[in-house]
Image (cartoon, rainbow, N blue to C red):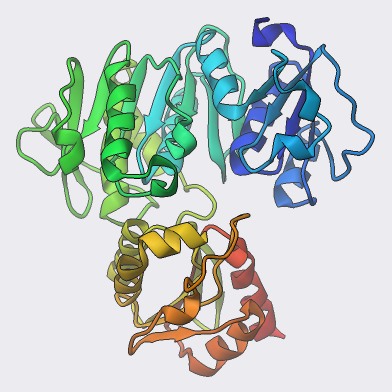
Length: 437
């Protein structure tokens, strides 16, 4: 197998996806000519074009070339593409295979967990860069400080990598130091059982070359036997202890955390980031100053605008634990009633977590549920957003009908949160435009 570095040209199938776009930007900055296909142009493909990456919505004229590196998103069936007859060629690979090969060439700082890994990877990348440590990074999100989450830094410095458990992507990545935020029952359509999911995390943790930073508050992580580790959480015996709302104890001293990120789950992620960055000789004061200047990742409790003192937010949360944490954080830090507009993501996830999803939405003052965003899945008989019921839960079939409902029900001082991993993110700006018109 050639080294990845030997390929001067790269073609990415599914380049508009969050994980693939960051790889595209990283490889482009590393000096490769990067081109990619996606079904439609988008905010992400526009950002890539601005960064010198060519994107196309047409594949008919593409031909296989042994000198081009092809990376394929899990969202694509390779059988339906021009690469169908070349699947066994060494220059045609999936994203997990690419990350595995990349990890053989560079030092990897991995960040994994069922929740919080994107924002924590972005935060750690920001902490290094704020302190003039030009690490590389790859994570599936868009930040306020670097646009798409891909960057090629100094060759002798590590790559900060969001190591994703979906489809067991992280299985073969060679990791030097690893932060694990939590383990929760997600992606069970792939892993088939929670036990298998925990086993997958355990195998990754046990292969880490140096130190594992572990969230001691997570019951599943506490049970894993680890040789070299640092702990964080609320427990008295941890290395870095959190106390709500904003205190971190490190080396027997209390430090106040000044951060735009609100909620207990973010304070936990911040503690993990601090623990990880201390492994690289950054002082606690340098780390805390950087944290105070971090404004977050797009779609992670992102403030998007105000109409007559009604504030609008958007969040990517699509699992019950994430939804509960996001609603709790907003209710604790805002006045007025909270209206949540939730778009379930995938039929399998809705089926596997239905009761917990419904329960988490009941924490809002009012919740609107729209039709399931399929993310390419076939519908499952009996699995529908119509099944969501409760005194404060209302099913509205079409996203286009939601602005009218919001206009008729909000009062000055209320808050509106769009929630989900699908195209519900487009709805907040549309509601604001409708209200202002």
